[in-house]
Amino acid sequence: MNNNIVKKIACSLSVILTLSLSLSFGISALGITGASDYPNAVKEETLEINGEKLAAFAAQYDNVITLSGKEALAHDEKVNDILFNENLSSEQKSYYLSELGVFEVNPEKVVEYAASSSGDVTLNKPTIRYDSSTKQYIITATGKWNKHSYEVPAWSWWYPSVGSTKDIGGPDAIGISLTNTSGTTSGLALKSGYGNFYNGSATKTSSTLATENDNFGGGYKVQDFIKFTKVDYYVLWCNTTYLYNAYNMTCVIRYNSNFKNYNGNAKLFYAHTWNSTSVTSVSVSKTGAGIGWSSTANRWDAYSYARTFKKGAATN
Image 1 (cartoon, rainbow, N blue to C red):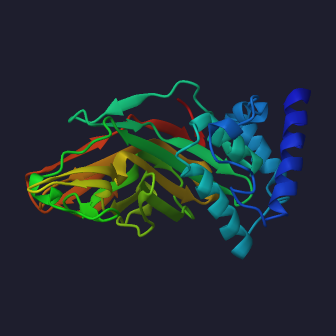
Image 2 (cartoon, rainbow, N blue to C red):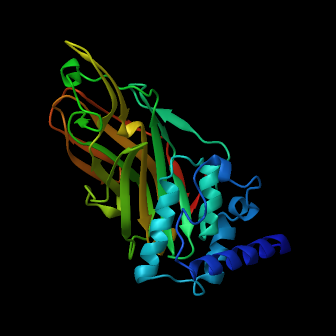
């Protein structure tokens, strides 16, 4: 490890210690409201600590910073606030996460995308981060609809009130699957996770795991809906303006430190339903995600490209 890396790690440690020991501030205290609050210079250690450097960083400071109990919960809330902030780019999120001691594992400067078969959504390859404060690995993936509007059946447009919502079919599903896995699973544990749909004031989050095989990722059932923000009434019809809550989507799963001994591919998956169709079950296995449906019609599923990980460090 050269002197520059040592200096950067020392600088990072100083920041992490200062922020970790003072847990009274949240995302708002950092002054994060949008892109205009983002510093011009990206912190170099965020981009350089990866692979073997990350392993050395974790090994050197593994016993210095350890949060547990209420402190760990407060720390996780701040991390989630950043991950779920729709006003921040991925680079901005990396900057603020580094302030909390959360570093991306071998970050990619070029993001790859994979659209669903319907062409309506774009799903990003997962990102893997190491949280030096809780000794956890955080796997995050985001997706987005490729259009702002959503086709709503005409009958649901009759005189809704502003602020009211209308479900689009039954629950959708979002998750991250770990496929083609190998390595030691002894002690490996999925600590927590979330599936989140968000679009302005229209949001829905589920932290209730719908899957069982934790070694192969996690999935969540989340209801998608539209929220009416404006209604213009006429004699026989009305014009509406609304937000579709699943326009932006994020999934986060957290593993304990034993994830560093694991190998495989991480993929984001999303299952969409409408009309009377619902997602009835979600499963994950070594070969991928499985979706149970209430009907053979009015539904589809989509998957991102895979992010390869090896002993806690991504390789592509």
